[in-house]
View 1 (cartoon, rainbow, N blue to C red):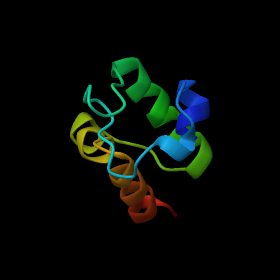
View 2 (cartoon, helix red, strand yellow):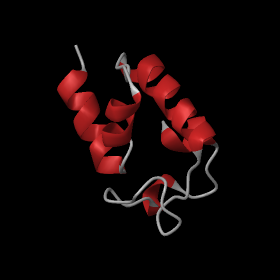
View 3 (cartoon, helix red, strand yellow):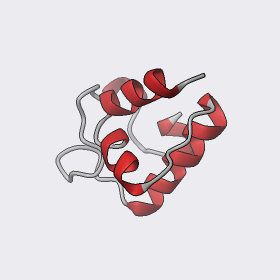
View 4 (spheres, helix red, strand yellow):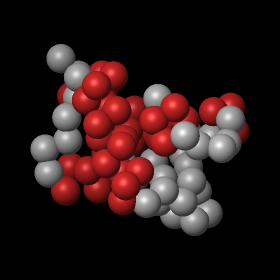
Length: 74
């Protein structure tokens, strides 16, 4: 979902599970990418992000997105 939604130029196989999303040493995403991720999570998994604090925790890394979706999926 991330590679398609964000049109990343990195193959999904090269994205580590512990990769930090917004850190330059990780994927180096920006605020527009964060919005795209939230929309993609809702569309693909039916999981919304209600506020900026939840977004900060959920969108820290690939693993945190996974954990957030698993914990909040209905």
